[in-house]
Every structure is written in structure tokens, then in C-alpha cells.
Length: 257
Image (cartoon, rainbow, N blue to C red; front, side):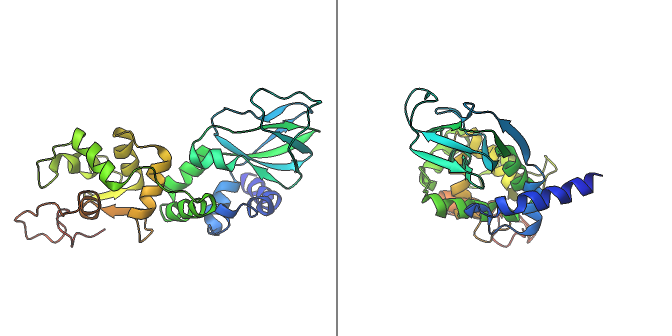
């Protein structure tokens, strides 16, 4: 049955996954989600598991065999010497997976290799489905790789001002685009992770910077922030309040999450 298959996967892969620093502090539900999305892939001797210059869309867990790491510009030959050997139980490929950067090395199978593969889409799906895991993941890999955003909130403000009316003190067109509630994903006035991604992608902020800036924005690690908080963070001042007595008015600081 499907449930039995999931339990077998959990037993087989949990030890491998728990060796990865940025995954160690996830709760059991999030780990089960990721483990359930691992897939096996076999590589024969001389096959390239990772190619330098490729987009990092996955990371690998080596369950059987061993492989060589090469940093040369061109594809290495079998007789070339590797700078490092990765062995059974190792994991690799997570840096390009997390940062969106291109692969910086070749990894060639030196024997029959059985790998378990975690796709970037699995992490994206986890973030979309379990908002509380977003900041945990981001802060974990941020600490691991010592990453800082390449853009400041002032840069984000400049880009938003090109797309939305900079002279409107209520930021009405920005509100209508990012959290009017028309998408049915969340209440009006609430910027979810998904809505935030759509907005920052529109102003061409890289996926890595989106993640790093979100960790600064969502201090409560709830997976969503109010429009009011977002505007104060980006613009340095609150959106102009309406005359409404409604405490849930999204343009007021008292608006509920």
C-alpha cells in the first residue's frame, strides 16, 4: 500500500536526511514530507552525477558506491585524479540547490552508485504547504552558508516604485496586486509566502534574495505578514489609514493576521 511504502521510505532515508545540517531542525511532519518525495537514481561507473555549469535543481544522497569530485573547466576523463572522494552515506549538491547558483564542480561515479534525489520543487512545495517551515529552512541554510541578501529593502522600494504609484500614501495599487484577497489563498491584507514570491518575482528579485529577505520580514515565523508591516519595512513609514473604524482595516497596525 501507499502508506506502507511511505513507512519503508521513512526507515530507509531518515538517517541520510538527518545528516544534512539545514534539515536537522525541521519538525517530523516536514521531514516526512521531504522523505516521501525522494526518488532513487542509479549511475554507472564514469557517469556524471553532477556537471559543472548546470543549474542545481536537486541534491543527492549517496546510498551505495563512491564518486570523485573534479573542479576542472572541461569534463574530466576516467583516468584523471579527483580532488576529493565522496563515499556511501554522503550528500552533495545542496549549495547550488539552495542558492540557485550554477554547479561549480563535476562529480563522476567511480563505481556503481545508488543515489536518492531531492528535487528543489519538493522544498518549494514544503514552503508553500507548511508556512511555519519557511523561516526554519531559510535561517538554517543562511547560517550554514553565511549568506546575506544582495539587495536591501531600499533597493526593493526603488523597484516597487517603478511598478506601483510612489505618490499614493495608501499604496492602494500595491495592496490590490499583492493582498486584495481576490486569489482566494488567504484573507485580504495578509501577505503570504506565495503572494510575496509573486510580488518580488515581478520586480525581478532573485529567488535567493526573496528567501533571505523573507527571513528578515517574518520575524514571528508564521508564514505570513500583514500588508501594514510589509509597507513599514520597505518604505520606512506606515500606509495612510482610512477613516474606517474597522480594526481589521489592513492599512492599520491593529489589523489581524
